[in-house]
Length: 247
Length: 252
Image (cartoon, rainbow over all chains, first blue to last red; front, side, top):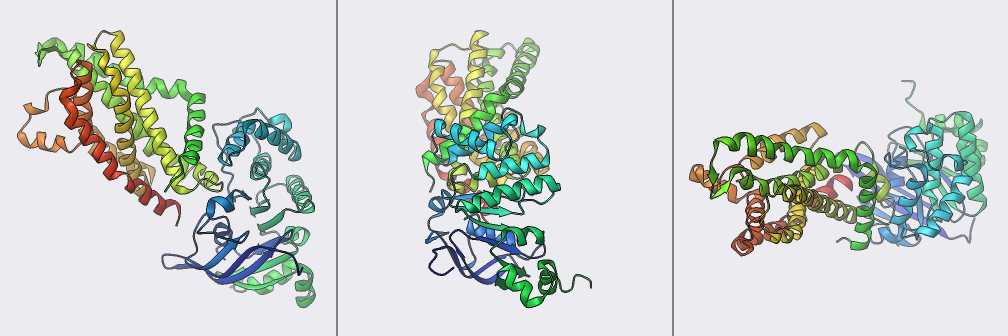
C-alpha cells in the first residue's frame, strides 16, 4: 500500500454532542483506491466519523483532511469530489426517478445535457432504466437504495461514502449493490463504508477499523485479523467489539 | 456567507416541486383570501357604509394582498422548511453536495420571498378583476412583496430552527400570525383601537405592508415611505438570525 496517496487523513479526531462523546481521538489514513470499512455496534461513532469526512459536521477537535484539504476550510471543494450514500433514503418524494438524478446534478453545477447522459448511464448501471419516469414512492426499498447509489455517482466521485449501503435489503438486492460497488472499486473509486454485515466487510473491504464507544480498537486487513484472532471476521468482530453484549 | 449561485440551485429545486404541485397549493392560498373578501366585504360590508371614504370591500381588498403574501412565506418557511429538514431529509441530501448550510438557508429564504410575491400577485389580479384596485401603481407593490416576503420568511425560519416538533408551529400561528392578521389594519383602521394597540401594530411587519398595499392601490405611493423604510431596515436587521439558528440546528 505504500506509495499510494492518502485520500483521507484523520488525526486525533473527536466529536462530542453536548455531554456525549461520540468519537474519541481517532486517527486513520485511507489510501487512494482502497475500500475501507468502519465496523462497530450502533452508537460506536461510525456514522459520526463518516459525517465529518463528508463535511456534514465539523470535528470538535483534531483534524480531518480529504484530498489534502481541511474539512472545515474547503467543504464545497471537497464535497464536489465526493459521493454520499446516507443511511436513510433521502430521495425527493415529489420527483420521479430521473428527476431525482437531474435535480441532484444541478447542485454540482453539471450541465443539463451532461446530467441527462450521466443519469441514463447510471440508471442502466443500477438496473432502473425502465423505472426512469416512475415516482419514487412506487419503488421497492431495494430499488430506492440503488437509486440513492446512482445519485451518489452523478458527479463522478473519486471517493464514495456509504453508510450501511445494504441494510434492510433482500439477498438479491444486496448482491446487486455489491456487484456495483466491486465494479466501482475496480474502476479506481475509493470507498469508505460502514456495515453490520461481516460478510459484506469481508467481501468488499481491503482494510477495516473496528470501533467501540467512539474509539478505534484496531485497523487491519480482514485477512490479518482473522489470522490473528482465529475464525471468520464475525468472530473477530464479536471478540473485539461485542464484549458486554451478552451481559 | 452564502453563494448566490449555489443558493439558486436550492431555489430551482423548490420551483420544480412547485410547478409539479401548483394546482393544489395555489388553490388553497387563493381561495381563502377571496372567501374573506366576500364574507367580510359583502356580508359585513352591508352594515358598514364607508371607511375612510371607501366602500368597505374596497377598504379591505388591498389587505388581502398583504395577508396572502405573508401566509405564503410563513407556510413555506415553517412547515415547508421543517418537513424538508426532518421528515424528508431533503436538507441532508442537499448538504452532501457542494451546497453548504448558508447556501441552503439563503435558497429557502429566496424561495419563500418568491412565493410571497407570487401569491400577492395572484390576489392583485383577482381583486383587479373585481374592480377593487384604483391605480396601476399597485404594480410597484411587487418588489415590496419580495422584501416583506424575505422578512416573513426570516421570522418563520427562525421559528423553524428552534421548534422541537412540527406541532409547536401552532403557537407561532395562534399567538403571532393570527393576531397580526386581525390587528394590522386589514379589517378596520387600527386607530379605532386604544392607543396601545397602535403602538404594538407599529412593531409588526404586516401593519406596514397593509399600509403600503392600500396606498399603492389608491395611487398614493409617496405617503408610505416610512413603512417601506421600516420593512427594509427590519429585514436587514433580522437577516443574520435565520442563518445563525438554522446552522446551529443543521450543523451540530
